[in-house]
Amino acid sequence: MRIAAQMPAVAKYDVKVRKAMCRVIGYGMFEKGRVIVRQGHPAQYFYFVLSGQLEIGKQVDDDYNILGTLSPGESFGELASSTTSTARPPSPQRYSTERERTDTELLYIHKDDFTSVLRQQELLDLKDKEDFIASIPLFSDLPARTIRHLAAVCQTKELQANMLVFAEGDNNWFVHIIRKGDCRIVKYVPFAELDLDPKGARKVVVPYPLRDGFVPPFNYRVVPHFLRVANVSSGAHFGEVAAIAAMGSSQLGLALNFPGETRDLLTARFSLISNSRVRYLSISWVEFIRICTVQMAAQAGEKYLQDHARLLNIAALQEAFIARRHWNANKQAAVQQVLADGARRKRQ
Image 1 (cartoon, one colour):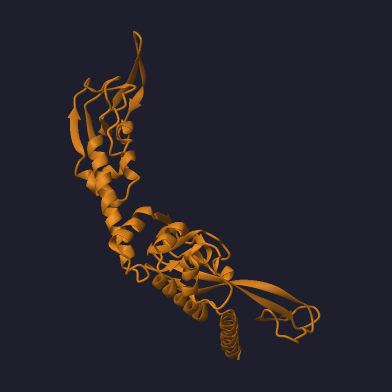
Image 2 (cartoon, one colour; image 1 turned 120 degrees about the vertical axis):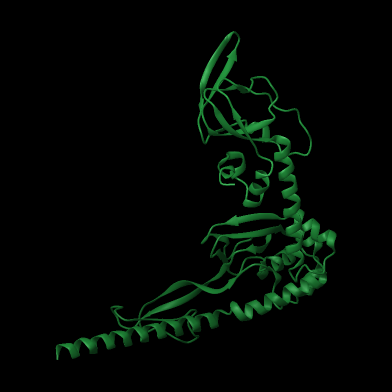
């Protein structure tokens, strides 16, 4: 498995594919002078050099030119496995001859075995996606053929930690479903920083916009903060309400039961950022609207309003943020006081 993972044509696939590849990889030991592949012959295998050296040569008219050598860790013949189509195009021809310069050990895979493993893995991945989508309450009542269609048309994407899935205010045209890993919901929240004296030596942070009728005694400035309001993990989904508002029928729009203007639903209300390595599915709005039912729209609208009240209430976020600032400031002052009292007692 470790050696196979070093083969360029294998290493780019995930662990499950590499394990399956190991079952079809062959091993061969070849004596010095043996021709492994000959220029002009059909390309059927690709090879990985375990030990020894091979000579690469090319015949041009009557001249045989040595192009270089291959050493342990290097590979050749990847072109033979470059097609994964179920059709069988003619095998490409070898453009050079590989001959053993020393006794050599090789690993090799036939292109038919290679493509067969990939086809099997694609079918397994499709079934996994079907099961996953069917487990999500929003989609659970859809017919099996519809779930199968969604699994086939959705895109699988991966991100490393601390990368943006989508940003607040975006129109991203997709419904996203977290499959593995977890993310944080981050919300832009404005505050006002007020000066408490003419020189601005003392300041205080208050919610913005300022209360009606309140006139700051000195200068103030608007200070944005990006607050983490929640963590979400596998099964969390986003964007379905925007899809319905943008492309859904009037019947689906009514089922949302949204009290405001539907145009307010078109953009993302927060940013979604990966906490760890994340794999997620993306379904285009067009495909989502094709399968969306009135019951799904009603469920999506209810979830939207609950999330807005629980997570995205700006006044509540501002109040909680300022309370945390006061708590941290008081805690820091108390610690400094304790340290100062201890230092004073030592001096006495």
